[in-house]
Length: 192
Image (cartoon, rainbow, N blue to C red; front, top):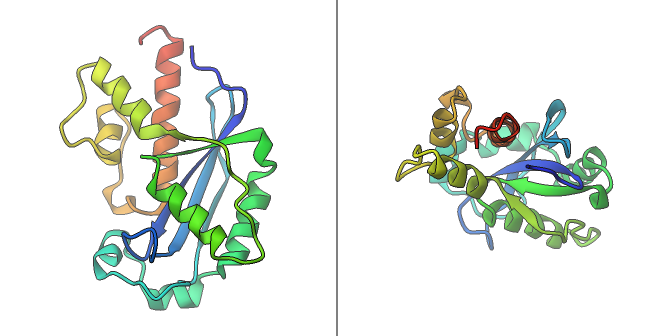
C-alpha cells in the first residue's frame, strides 16, 4: 500500500533551452500532495521568471509558447520566484519533491539556486520520479506504449488531457499529480 511519511511537492519547470548548464528556468509550477495520496490543487504555485542567462532556443519557445518579450514584461526576478516558492512550499523537512522524469527539472532548479549568490539549494533530499511510478503501473496493466510521455500516460490512465495546456509548468505538475493520485486510489481499491 502506498504510504508516505511526508507530503509531496510535485513541480515542473519550463526553460529557455535544453542544456541544463546554459539554459534558465522561465516558469516554475507546483502542486502539493498530502502524504495520504490526496492531491491538493489549491493553493497551487506558478510564476514566470525573467530570463537570467543568454540562452534562448527557438525550439524551446515553440514547445512552451512563452516569448522572451512576454517574460520580460510579466516575469519575476529569479530570487523573488525562488523565495516565493520556498514560502509556498514550507519547511523542506516536511515534504519530498516529485517530478515527471527526474533529472532535468531538478538540475534546473538546483542551477537556479546555485547561480543566485544569496541563496542555497534547500532540497538536498531525493526526488520521486513520477514517470517511473506511472510507467511501471501501466506496464503491469499491459497499457504502456513504446512512446509514453506524460500526456500519453495520462490518457492511458483515463485522465483527460488538454493538449493546448501541455508544457505549462502548473498544468504539467498537476497532470503528474493526477496520475499519481489515480494510481494510489486504484491500489487502495485493490486493483493493483
